[in-house]
Image (cartoon, rainbow, N blue to C red; front, side):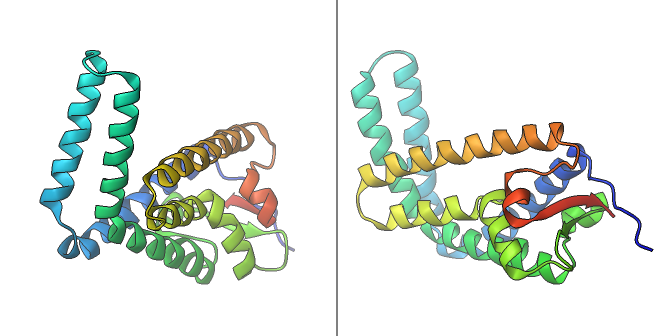
Length: 199
């Protein structure tokens, strides 16, 4: 007779997520570093910081800040495009493929002794895709990357703003759902028919 697994604690899920994001970020940086012009990226980042400082001191108008910020954000995205692509690929391999074949566990989840459980007999690829597109911001990353390729700074900037806002709203709603619901299911769990449980 199967014993019913108890829902994972929010803290367990949060720590597991942070561990996983850190792992993917480190690997993506290591893989992409040889192909990235770090001096140029640093130069743009410094310009962004200087722009923020000018805006804070009211040395430039809001319109000037917005236009220059759009230019710099778009330039930085183009310079770091390869890192973005590597991150998307690693997220797909790690959060969808590896997690599926590792019985619902990433390294972070293993350390926190939690796993994803399916409402069906076992986890499927479709469930992991639906879940990870939202939970691990893979969909947002893909959309942002496509906007960056569009060669239009305004399309990139406004598209990023809109879809990032939607992602933040979904994330906040999911956090409240995990904390409030008895089964601890978030939006992506409901859509994918999954639940995160203690191992």
